[in-house]
Structure formats: C-alpha cells, structure tokens
Length: 96
Image 1 (tube, rainbow, N blue to C red):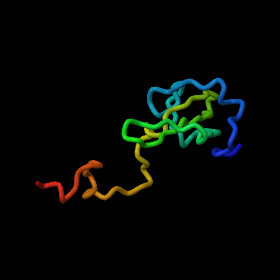
Image 2 (cartoon, one colour; image 1 turned 30 degrees about the vertical axis):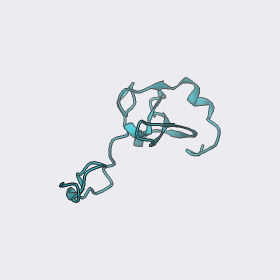
Image 3 (cartoon, rainbow, N blue to C red; image 1 turned 120 degrees about the vertical axis):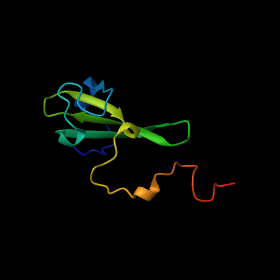
C-alpha cells in the first residue's frame, strides 16, 4: 500500500482519532507503523489558511489510528536553527 494512494485502504475504516500523535493502544510512534495512508484528497483549512490532512496509521499492535498532519511533532531528523525561533509574523524588521 502506498501512503499517497488516491483511495483509502480498507483498514482505515476502523481508525480511531488519537489525542496524541502516537498509537493510543501501545504508545508507539508513527514511524513504527506497519502501514500509513495520508488522505491528501480532502484537506481541511485552518484559521490561517494552511492545509492539514488526516494521516492514518496501522500500528504493529494492529491498532488503527489517525491524527491531523499539523499535530505531528517536529522531526528529530531535522536540525533546527536556534536563530529561527521567531513566529510567523515576527522578524528583525518588526521593531517599530
């Protein structure tokens, strides 16, 4: 199964919404999932006009769960620049 397939796999029908971005049954990370499907056909728009998607995961414990893409924690694989802690509307030219 491909994560970006246009139609949902059958296993997504039993998914439960996870309150935290991990398996609600065993606490495993999304990176430990046996299968993943992202519903890119039906984005939802946030109050700041940003898109978010439902991400579905079938855990190795057989629990099927979903969460919003914008709830995913920052990746441990991406190195953050400590000088980029400014918010979306903040910056060096905002000192007036």
